[in-house]
Image (cartoon, rainbow, N blue to C red; front, side):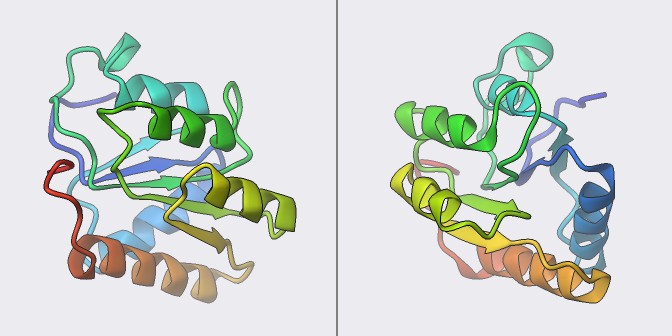
Length: 149
């Protein structure tokens, strides 16, 4: 159940194992205090645009979105397209983190405005390391637009 708090990372991931590994890797580096996990593209859009179950949420935008491509209800590319088409959300950094390594997905993601495309590593240790590095870079090193804060 959603709590009305500011969110730093919106994790959009339908696979519970990948989501738990992601949350574990972020927690290990103290980056999970403000993470919201949604399990499909429709819920991601509802969260970002403050509608449905999220209509009453805090009005701040996440500092980053970790977005899977293969999602139920609304796929990740459509989520990315809608995020970039909206003035309120277009500057949020979106990192596509997916099991796909297909060139068509990479090209489509960047054409739609992804800030980064990362193929999910298969092994647990490599997966955890990749997520931790992403979290540390996007939350601590990268400077986001003041319009997002």
